[in-house]
Length: 391
Ligand SMILES: [Zn+2]
Ligand SMILES: [Zn+2]
Image (cartoon, rainbow, N blue to C red; front, top):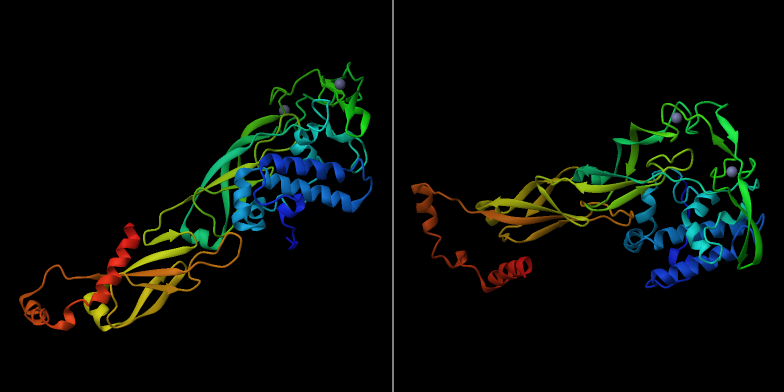
């Protein structure tokens, strides 16, 4: 996907970062009316602004998306678009009317509002589209998969379009009769009082859902629903740096809608598998390195595991337990691609549990040596370490 420089969503809607949901909605409605295709026919700039406002509203009106956006910026919400016609990839005007129709509708007195009389792309065929329900799945990832990001194939059971009738719900092409309510036009004319004055609006025929015809003989495979339950393998791209509990949404990869329409979304909840050696702290990875007593005293070079291999680290002579060595950029990438965490190597020291007679004889001489008594500085250092851990 090409890199598009995006404007800040708060800037797009001209609201502060602390704006309430109501303020955001009000501002979006203002923008939607200002740049509405009916008021700006053929104006590509207005169309872009209309779409930009819709995208900003989509994120800022959803608490979950908004907090991800606040934390990670555009990448926090766009990484999930999965290449499948999501953000940036461009919403169609139909998507916008369908998704936010209720927001527009509040500005009008006419109850359910049917997509501003079409307008875009010509045709005047704009109508409310059925939307399939969202599909929720959990995906378990290892820390290593999280470090690189990964493409996963997942098997789901979901509503798909019936192949026999291609989603129409009709047994065959002859199984239709003209709708008596709209005489096949699919629309009926309604007069509404709107912000722009009295408007005659063509609304979807309530009896045939705008199809202009009704089915006389239902598809035997789906019983006229146009959808059936089936298994499907979905390929989804999970960005690097995701966290346990995060939810990513993949537009229109969810359940198919009844008798044509757009799919719901696929909502993927991330679960993180526990790593046998590493503990994750946001973007940092913590590794506990246990040194032998002579290693800690004499120092030397030690190999530690990293998320993608190994690294050699230098142990200074006289290294205390509780000391933390930081390996820059050996942690996890941020989900917004801004920077990387570190690998923190926490030092522990192993004290022998049993000594041979000979070893004991050697060590006992050290016991009274002032060299083997912890200094006040070291006592304070180790004390602080535990205060931080438990405090
Ligand atoms: Zn009709
Ligand atoms: Zn069917």
